Length: 499
Image (cartoon, rainbow, N blue to C red; front, side, top):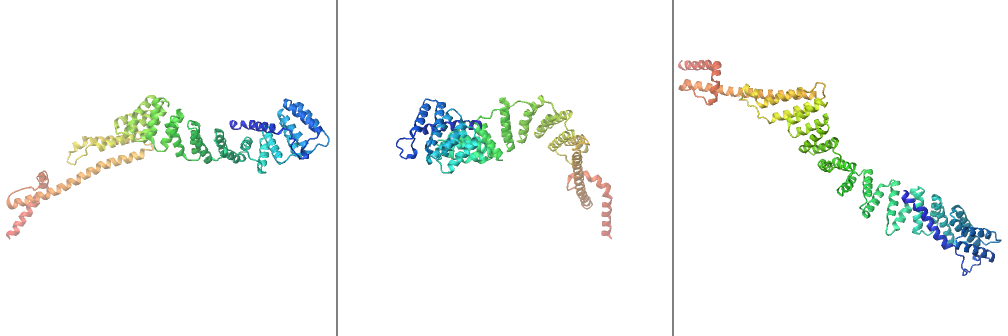
């Protein structure tokens, strides 16, 4: 704001100087109205005062002008001119208060025409502004405009800046907008003024338009881009703010660690974890982001969000060498788990437990990884012997999984789920055994039927022939249970036939 307002006083003084210089000439001889002529006595004093002014002796001029005001029967016009000259000399001595009083006296004298009165009103306003009475001077100048006074561009600028310095931003805005609209070409000070006012008056949409125009004029100024992004963010237009930040980063304007981390967060927030990870990895390698465990964990987390678990593993391994915390080892374990590297994952989880990480969570993940390994093993077959089933890789992996779930501490929040998993895995094996029993019963029943048919055929044609050779394994069992019954039925049939 100081930079915007520093020219207000200087502008007022410059306009005053130009105005006073033009107004201090004595009335021309061609003026024909008697009321606008000087008497000989008064004219002589005024001429002497003007000569002293030309000689840059304002103090001497003021003494003579004071004497001139005592001349009897001064006309209103004479009094007005003398007071106007007094004001100019007070101004030259930087005595702004007396200067204002003299100019106001010139207006009240009644001898000035409309144009001269208007000119005096402008000078009074300028002097008030230059004398740190910005609000009073601005009001006077605005009144002049409202009464039909000429709105010269330099006057409009002065009025806007006066209200601005008086911190009456609402009154300043319409005049500032008018000043800027008329400017051709527009300079930086025009944009800066509107930018400041829209910001002060909480007009972010208008401020954003101004800042955008400024960026078009001065694209190399990073502060403008930052301001544009901030305006979008403040207005809740986060995507637009992100777009601006992205342009800044791609253009090489964001170089500090906080700036880079902010753009990484933007990418992550908008569900682009892989791009965020790429940026963070590149900046870590370039040394613009500190290579410390926290940043490595962030990078690994982004890779994991992007399901790039393989790329997360070496990052986490590097982090664990810098900071052997339980959380870091657990993070490494999860990454290895997602890559299906159960043995390495288990090692990492156990190291995490040893460093205070939640044992329930760790053993649950170890067990889950072991269970997934169960699914990779060759399935058991009902034709396998009990001994073969007991040592089969799938059985061993299943038992290992149960043991891992049993390691979940009873007090852990994971305990209930662990027990459910154990029940599920045991039920899974029980279901397999029940299926085998059912299949065995079906085979046995079918074979018994086949064996019975073979025995009946043997009674008729003397040949025992099985339809399914595999049923030979069930003949002994059948004989124990049913052979005598079959023979008895056959003999009964023969006896009935003979009778």
